[in-house]
Length: 262
Image (tube, rainbow, N blue to C red; front, side, top):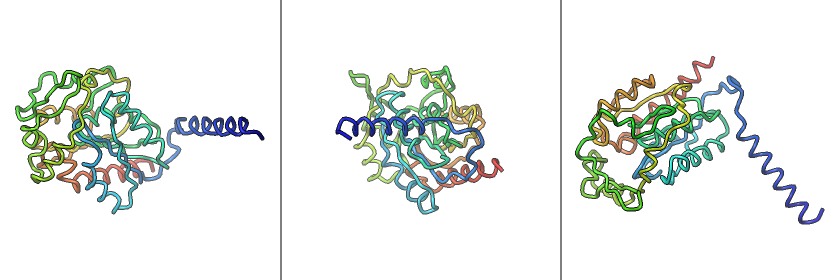
């Protein structure tokens, strides 16, 4: 076989494998308890904040995968999440923090996803933008976004700890502040095509000292999606400061969806 024929054969196999991995799994086909967890970070952060949750989950025997969202658009973040989901070897609990909630709402229709966990996270509906969720609510004054001319935004450095990580250690809060990943603010105006929470069971962790969201907004979003709610005294950085609580909820979700399938 010549070189061109070999290359053609390899490409054909790759395309076939990719097509198979994206094919929907038949409903009810895989009733195993999810041992895979995919963690999706929010705006102004990256995946490193999940480290303590990752350590807790892996100690419990889960395979945890952390998505690194580019935060350039909703489509790009959903694509990054779907790539992670495609790589899993079985059922998944999909977890999102803050903006990551919007991402898992769109990406969570993936056939491997069995449960959704919203960690102080947004949960828009299909046909709705993330920005529309804020109507009628007042964001606390501690949370201040610094918008740049190119359309990307950071949290203002001087307000970062108060608005994002008030219960973190000074060192952790400083690290989060100085490793911020800006988000393309236009992403908040993108209309969602899917709402995975309409077909997948959902859990919500609400940080009661969160200063990035109106507390009423967090409660109302959880109520609307029918989530099982766990409240914990924590800042918006609950994913970093309360890793055991977050891991406990993920573990609960994995066990519950397994039990309901039998």
